[in-house]
Image (cartoon, rainbow, N blue to C red):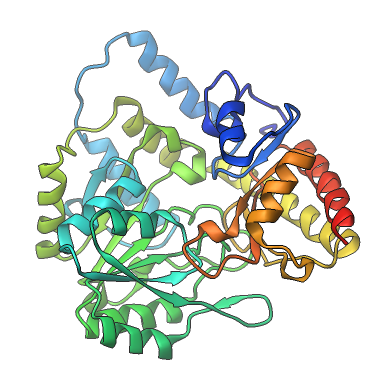
Length: 394
């Protein structure tokens, strides 16, 4: 049993999420008793198994250049097979330096300035920023909301693809910010549209390890002909709280696409891994499945507490079912205040720091995102403050 109520010292860690100067620069004059529930990392200590391996590495006292040794490939192949039920070959795997930077390199590899990409919105905002930094245009496909759940509008998506002829589609699965788990049939329809229209489908599965309601289906479960048009980006960073190691990997079936992708990585000297990053991946996948199961149980209970509290205390807001991840997506449209004003005032008046839904490219202006990867005490205290804040608005 792991105790997720223990609070590690995140201030001395120098993490952005808990740094008062960074917080005040973003939110304004926030008091020192703040509760940060914005940036998407967790406040839990990493699994002891990973900590022990890191300590062994430090005690060795040498941090020379390393390489992608066999244990790395074996761990990835076994994880994808045993956890997600998919077969991956060693030559399809490429180590990368974090998913966000890899999105940049992917756009550099397959797009020229003035080209288009397409994505569903709202969505993880680095998808857009990575594109704009390369001079690539962004087409947004607004997700439909039916019974407080997101759905892809395939008719509109097809029209947009045929009109704007994007080179890439960036696809979050599970969805960030809502946690929506796409069915295999939905994923298949996206993949078919992309293949039929010569759009490479880039799938981000970094939130695939936190599943609470429903069944996650990896895009790698698709048929072989569709897999020939897919780049999968993933890592254990969200699942095991290793984001600061900036280590991830891709899986690309198509040799031509893979070679073009790797060529761009080599041009940017993305070669040997971080010493701790590769150890973190191997240990997480090989030794930390019990920890992951228990942290998911803890996070799910946090969500159920939030869901119940909202229904009973502040029913004028509504949370989407957090099917995956540790990020609750909450509709505040009935309050008559936009997400930017809500998050800024909540931070400066009550010290609760949430993510502004307007940051998620488009169509998130009436939402806030709440990070539940934290100690239960923080969740309870934040809810009390949020209730007081909302009562002061109405």
